[in-house]
Image (cartoon, rainbow, N blue to C red; front, top):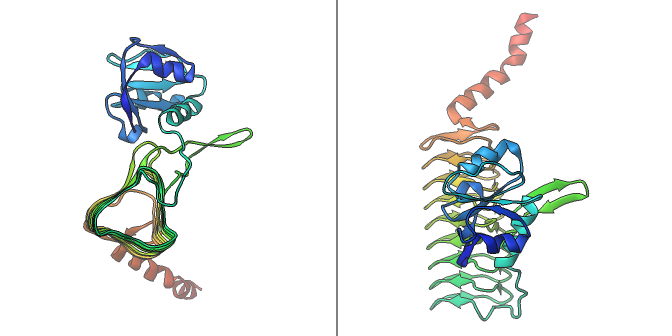
Amino acid sequence: MKFPNIQALKDIAAIIGSEYVGDDNFPVHGMNEIHVVEPGDIVFVDHPKYYDKALQSAATIVLINKKVDCPEGKALLISDDPFRDFNKISTHFRPFQPATAIVAPTALIGEGTVIQPNTFVGNNVTIGKNCLIHSNVAIYDNTVIGDNVIIHSGTVLGGDAFYYKKRPEGFDQLLSCGRVVIEDNVGIGALCTIDKGVTGDTTIGAGTKIDNQVHIGHDTVIGKKCLIASQTGIAGCVVVEDEVTMWGQVGISSAITIGQKAVVLAQSGVGKSLEGGKVYFGSPAEESREKFKQIAHVKRIPEILEKLK
């Protein structure tokens, strides 16, 4: 998320009540998670295991829970609880705005777009031309939808990320202030849920078609002209490259990449990145021909045991 205006380091420190290392007027452009940070961004880190990754990332401001040597050209915000203070910054720059109408007056809706009754359109939503949004769709604040998009009933765009920190008293949620971006010519079935990014965008590429009851997690990027069949679940921070096909009930774990034109067959579980241009099956998913051979061998085990007797 980029701030409306460039902020000074001292002003960000004042918002969260923290010490800082760096020039008072060190420029702060926004905030982001580690996998999408850019120069000018704040990134937070609260575990020694990830200190080096955060300090060496593209982010130029590191919100950290220990005084460490500050890399050249960067600044530090020293906090006893970076997770909590990252939420404070999110809330300061993008606070929750209660709805005042079923279609917010700040929403921009393109020519020829039809929105069926009982659909909710939140604050600062943008919908392009010639879209068809069926009844009982919920489009949360700041969502961006392109031209010629079809969204079927019961779908929710922009729910919070499933991102929590375990504390003694329970689970503390990392607040989501990102967006959902739906590009042109996308089709989304009924009862789908697409979560917004924590600070960035969850993106569905142009021409992609999504079946009913599909879930897509925060900050995931789906490429162009993909096909995703029903009951597929895709975790957060996944990259699905162009023209990938996923058949029904595929499960994808977080922070992996599915290569261009890969095909993942039904009921497969994907726990690591997959090379493009191949067909995969099983849990854990492997190339389908090899997996089917393994299954055939397993079926022969009773016969082999009988022979051994």
